[in-house]
Image 1: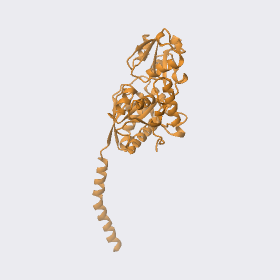
Image 2: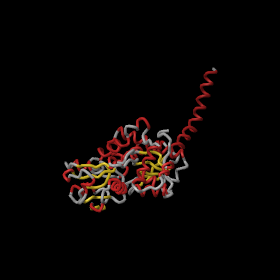
Image 3: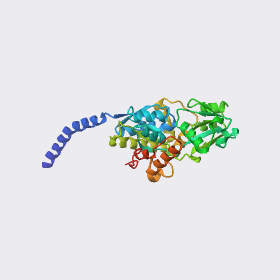
Amino acid sequence: MFNAYALAAVSVLAALLSPARAASAERDSKKELREITFRLNFIPGPEHSYLYYGMEKGVFAKAGLKLNILSGMGSSLSAKLVGTGNEDAGLMTADYVLMGLSKELRLKSVATLFHQSIAVVSSVSSKNIRTLKDLYGKRLGVTLESTTYPQWQGICKLQGIDRSKIKEIPITPGLAGRMLAADEIDAYVGFAAAESLALRGQGIAVHEIRFADHGIDMYGMTLAVGPKLMDDRETVRNLRNAVIESLALAQADPEAAVTALRTGSATEKGFGDVERFRAFLGWVFDEKSSKLGIGYQTPQGWKTTAETIRALGQLDDVSVYKNAFWEDKPGS
């Protein structure tokens, strides 16, 4: 008899609690996500696929975040908008984090995605441009808004290249490959694999001169936050870890990640998008990332970056690197 009454009481209690649990679950599901204004370093492209894939997979929502992704126009703009507090976070190269700090912008890198410069001079192989001096008398496309342009200026200084002997032609982002194929320029300064994959797909052989092989020893792309988030370590940690998780998911299925980009950003399919994204992932998942973590960054890496930028004539005080980054291990 006791067991029967006890069972009935438990049943009644469960019935009474069920609506409360359901209501609690409903409240949790409707909990407002924190919106993060997130400035890209450029217009959405294959290299941003992991962000859209992470959103599609609910990675950011699980972290309590809603990304409002904004198209960019170079790291200079990202650093300015994030560093002045107009936006929460964004992608920018390490040199602009450091130069921004020297100009009293408030920036903090919370993950470094590229641990070397991926800037290159690309040319059609038949032009026989194998060294920087081979550019003398040639037409060189440059994107003035891109982080590659100050690196180009700096590498010329380091290597003793006389830029007056090269015809620099300002070009619109995304048109370099077409201009090379149409013989409107002989070479261009850009990022490795950005345009060359499309050209190779057309059967055009391309040669690249890598800046990293000519004295440009510095970190590349970073995830940085500004004053709107800097003091909210929990939110920053959630954002960083969500980005890292999204990268790992995208590495496992690059095709799905690129599809998410096209859906989420209304980006049209481009030739070699998946191959271009695979190249991006190769720079992120380098030989040290398995040991130090995706997005790792070290004091020595940032110091070397600052010293390189000073050598390029773009930074006076190397010591600003001490305030440029979080030392938390990615994923913690």
